[in-house]
Amino acid sequence: MKKHIPNILTSLNLAIGSAGIFYVLTTDYNYAFYFVIIAGIFDFLDGFAARLLKVKSEMGKELDSLADMVSFGLLPAFYMMKMLDNTSEFYWLALLIAIFSALRLAKFNLDDSQSDNFEGLPTPANAIMLTSLLYLGYQLPEMTLVGIVVMSSLLLVSRLRLIALKFRTFGWSGNEARWVLIFGSLVLFLVFRWTFIPLLIPFYIVVSILSNVSLNKS
Image (tube, rainbow, N blue to C red):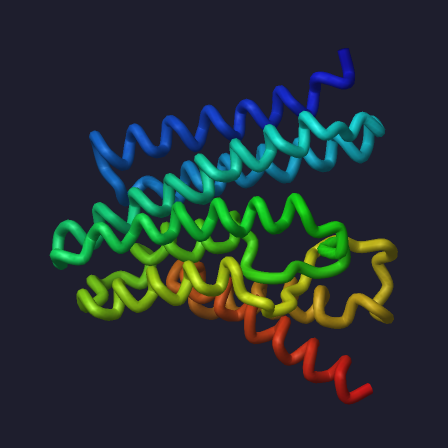
């Protein structure tokens, strides 16, 4: 029975993402962020359960990517399409998010080196960044939204090395960037409240770049 637990959690990720797409297309796309967060929780739990129970499998790996494609590829793509549909004739460009998310996930499955860090922006992080734009509190200009779509799509398949929040130990040494990211995010959230949420992923990227520069100098 225990070998099925991670796949059940992954299936819940898929179900939440599918429900989110339905809700975005038929009801209120502004709730997309909540579906992404709930799907992200199940995405974390399935990997955690697989490691804890020692039941990793190739099927689980493939199912996880398929679920992520729905929850963190298609869902944010349709969300941005709805946002742009209100202001721009370029709303179809939002499909780039789905295409590049698929490329990112396929690339990740073929790369065994992304354990301590990621190459390119992870799809859950990209989905959080896009669907949280409503917390800025104002409507972004048309071309700004188009630029965000294009830039986020390129970040998914970039060679940029980004921090993975995977702790081997919880000490400061060797985890400096991770702790800076965690505590820095908490402080900035306390200061700026919900308006910081759309800036969380850009902050994550900046901390990762500074960490890479520091490592290259040492």
